[in-house]
Length: 337
Length: 164
Ligand SMILES: Cc1cc2nc3c(=O)[nH]c(=O)nc-3n(C[C@H](O)[C@H](O)[C@H](O)COP(=O)(O)OP(=O)(O)OC[C@H]3O[C@@H](n4cnc5c(N)ncnc54)[C@H](O)[C@@H]3O)c2cc1C
Ligand code: SF4
Ligand code: FES
Ligand code: FES
Image (cartoon, rainbow over the protein chains, first blue to last red):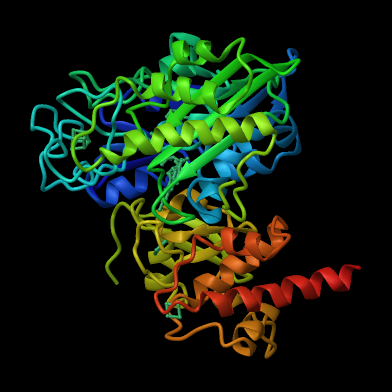
């Protein structure tokens, strides 16, 4: 680990001014940043520890939604009775990720900003455009079975590894942030970026901004949701492909559909045109297959990850079928039904 | 003894004992426990949050101590495997691991037991599948999983029975 100075912030203003120093980084749970520091991938000059700030908890919003504090541990969110009742898709996605120990420490804000698990990114001996802009992308033409099939660029084909964020994308969450200049709200769809020619930048959060909370709108799907995560082993592994699905049904007809995919792109992937294809249809396999094919139509494999195109297509159909049946994927026995 | 000039004062309660310590900001809680306090029960399997061998309780919650910078936990209460037995009596989970032969080399065992203490305190495991899933953060290279789950299930079901 590099040497750095340590500041324990006692107020948001103090944290924001401590962050103004070049090379300063926010430390929340530390489960991603400390790990990256051990690999010399992250080398902050100063750590601004925000873990003592009053940015935890979960509060009810006037519109029936819920607000998650930036520092609320992922486990507290997933097991909160209001989250389980009003945003069960989010609870399920969180419980599909990492381990119980990690979820006890990982925070809302840190989960949003966790970096890719691309093995080349993690290895400072290798080139990587995300770690060292301009050095190249060895994953293209290299080992890329974990990599992206949608929205890639010739500069980077990394995926965003979060499960929580896939559910947040399906739920149209809003990220509340603050900087010395004031507060603003970033819709989740605009929070994470595609790599383009700047793969070093994961999100649209400014270097001087701190996430303070995340707002979830009121529940729209009732029992008609599912988070399906497919991976190399049944627990404690990152997604190869995951799908967060939500359906609103009226008189046996789909009136609203949300489909977000994880493990396939540099951000949680939503395709609103494909979702619109489902509106007005009966919730049957034919309709689901039609939408799934539309989502995967622009997908491009790079060799090692070609399998993801078919896997994702089938995962979308399965997750939508589970959502339609009101039988969400179990994150305990893991049997895919 | 050499002390890093960047060391910061920190106060921890470790296994019930108050400790006034100093640590540089890059020292993890795991290294502090093992190297400074000589509590070598907590193991360094991977040092990257991937194996669970370093699991300890901080303020009543199980965490991977290899990913925690010690200075961030000033004021915290830490319990390690060394702090579970009371006097000469083993913690019920320690006894259950022996009774069920839930270890082979034993390297993962302190982390497994601390994790199981956390699991039972959290109260989210209601069946064997839940225990398996919620213990997935603890790897065992010897593959003692079946007996580990048996041991935890015995203590969990015993507690359920006692409450009924
Ligand atoms: C072995 C292992 C397995 C894992 N498996 C999964 C998995 O299957 N699924 C999954 O989704 N995740 C998984 N994770 C990742 C885990 O979810 C993240 O490490 C965690 O969510 C990060 O949260 P944190 O609070 O610890 O972040 P930190 O490490 O503290 O911070 C991460 C980043 O966010 C920034 N940051 C944090 N909070 C704020 C804020 N409020 N404002 C601005 N910036 C902020 C930090 O500066 C840093 O850049 C795994 C991690 C490990 C180690
Ligand atoms: S895919 Fe992105 S993160 Fe991975 S090596 Fe290429 S540029 Fe780096
Ligand atoms: S040593 Fe901490 S998880 Fe492996
Ligand atoms: S008993 Fe050997 S690693 Fe678990």
